[in-house]
Image (cartoon, rainbow, N blue to C red):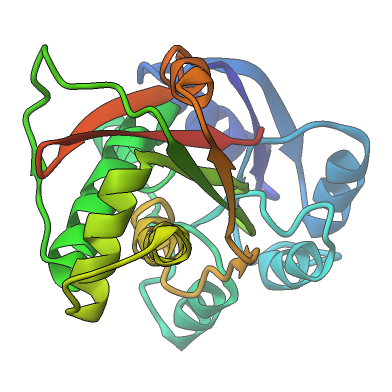
Amino acid sequence: MAINVLIVDDSSLTRKKIRRIIEMTDLEVEEFLEAGNGYEALKILDQSSVDLVLADLNMPEMSGDEMIHRMKADRATESIPVVVVSTESRTGRVKKLLAKGIKNYLHKPFSPEEFKELIYTLWDKTTEEASDLLTRALAEALETTAFSMILPVEDDMAVPKKTIWAKIGFMGPKSGTVEILAGMELGKVLAQNFSGTSDADEKNACDALQELSNITCGLFLPMVVSSTSDLFDITIPTVEVCNDSTQWHNFAEDDNSCTLNIEGYIAATKLIMED
């Protein structure tokens, strides 16, 4: 996916140098935008689509600090990733900005390798990679709360006749939906493991999958952001019950779904990430 990058620095030479370094990496950039100070950058952000901001701190008219403060106070720009590019070391000034939600810090001068590593580890996570992280979060949730494990998928696993579809949404630096689909029998097993009882009805099964989606989402979100200061709003999880296999087939055939084996029961997850 090609992205739009905004470079904010009062030196035109530095802006050109940063652009050249980025062009030496394999990052797909659709458009480079440039601003000489924070004031110019905010005007560009108001008029153009920007996916990543690289900003100096010490600039005339409006500093990088003030620009970042205004970006984070505006819902239209608060989720745009910002990386500080400066000659300053990790001073208290930079630490305050990290606490406000900037993605990271690059010390001038930096190499193409340093930039590539930062983008790969802190910003450019693809939906496929995020789906892998969701599976990891679900595995942790199952192990710690339901004493269950994800096993290799087997070819002859039976499709559930009655299913529970749990969904939970999240909004913040990234927005989307985490969805888990399981058969009613698996839901009852999870409910028994959650509560430590030997019996569970269908309501208990729905409650268990609802809680599993909530815990999984809570474990997943810190994995897809670069700063612990990133905050999310999470919706109340919901569940839908289907009395035949229609729901399973529709869910499992979606390109975004991932089929899993939970203690011998087939299940599936889906991660919808909004642009």
